[in-house]
Structure formats: structure tokens, C-alpha cells
Length: 108
Image (cartoon, rainbow, N blue to C red):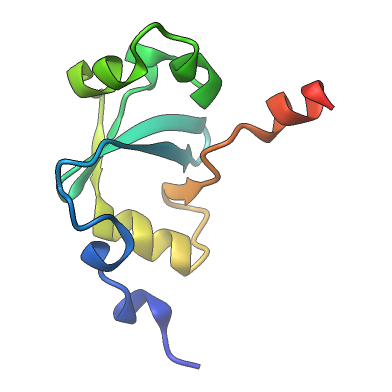
């Protein structure tokens, strides 16, 4: 089986419209999940500005505006996050489900 980390490039997994507003979550080892947005080739941690969960973001009056205005505490190259995610390297920041499953379980 080929090594997926060398076959998949960031431009192949995100929309070709670089103006798209993308949000998700990244697991930070030793810290926990962070809410993030994609800006070009960078992924920015916007947790401190909009809240720790996708639900926190979506509960705001204008979530899109909040994401666009967030400056981020830290950032990572998208390619590095994809490599860590595809190689299942949980010692480095990696992409996780954008949905907080604990919130879903509480609703069930």
C-alpha cells in the first residue's frame, strides 16, 4: 500500500476556492481539542477567541464574522497537520472530527 502522506497534498483536500471559510478541530497532544480555521496554507487556533467547541462557535450571532475576524493564538502548516493525521501520529497536532461527540451524546 502506498504511503498516503506523500500522495496527498493540501490543495487536494480543501476546496479550490481559497476564499472558502473553513473551520474544524485539531487535537493538541497534552492539551486537548482546539477550534481552528484554515487560512491559505496555515491552520490557526481560534479557540481563545470563539470558544473550545464547534457548538460554541455556532451559537454566536454571526459565526462567519467571528471566524473571519479571529487572529489565532498559534498556527501550523496545513501540510504538517495532514501528514500527522494520515500517519496517525498522535504525538503531534492532528485533525479530528469537527463535531464534539460528547455534545452529541448528551443530546441522545
